[in-house]
Image: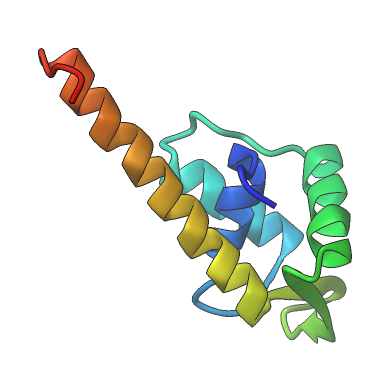
Length: 107
């Protein structure tokens, strides 16, 4: 399942504190990235469908109390594991980048 797209990774991240609806996820991703990543509705719902089919997230079958039209999604334990594995993979990329871009040599 790795590597994840940036959008998939951020969706999994913003669901870690608890269930969220699509619009809230889009806003939180934009906030986290300082506006660099803006997930539109088409991308979001395509990603939600893909993440659901891979059993990384679930539709909670509950609605947002503030707006019953908004469905809530939550990360599954597998989704959390995949997000953690992706974070470790990216940390390795950064470690290697620091090593080689700051004058490191092959070992």
